Image (tube, rainbow, N blue to C red):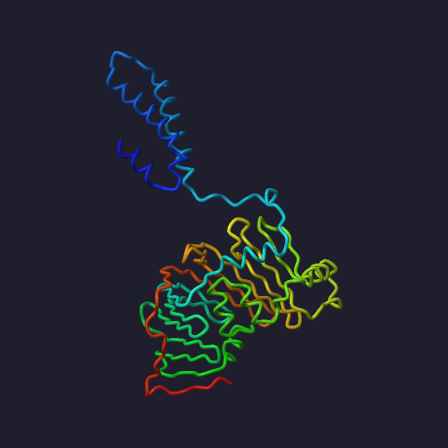
Length: 327
């Protein structure tokens, strides 16, 4: 009878829902055992298999109640107004003073590069973010981000770079700064909106798409109309934004920002959420920057989260390393 105990302890929060299943299963199990005990009682093979089939069916039904609830069908999602969506979403981003992620698996690709890295992260909110990069357990470099500078130490080439985010903006072909990175780490789209000057949500509308709540700027409708007309002369040099939220947890699952002036799109997908400090934190992030110049894709898979106080978030530059400059 050990398997009854295993089922009962498999998911503590579902005990009440499967207790009835367990009692019925137990009755069937005892009935099957009696087949061996009472040999005088002759059951046909068909009857035995039929009983066994019912037992397995009930077991599967009981176990299925422990699974993660499926996403709600789009037709069952009730519309929500903009203020409620903003309030709910604003309550669920990760709030931390210190943050560490011990394992980040990163895949980076563009027209010239296709590489995998492993990253460790330490962060002090609004102050510093330190990334330690390695490949095949060999240290490659470290990056220290602060609100006003980026310091990169390259252990392979024995040099370092100090910049004011110009290098990162050129590398990824997007406007990026310290708070952009911090907002992605926190899954805090409102911080990103404030830093990019697009936090006037009075110009946003809500809808339901792809089984999720959607918050999109009024300029997005203009973009959709232009794409339907396929008339280049109607191009509007504005910024279009669209955000997708989980209808149950109100986590940000997808973010799209299109810059009409540069014809460039930033797309971020957040998935595999885990609980960190009672907030939902994405265990995977996919970032794509799509433009006429180049497409860049970054995939991050993360685990080993902690909000305990981190040790030193500093970067030492070896004396003999040569400083390089970004042109």
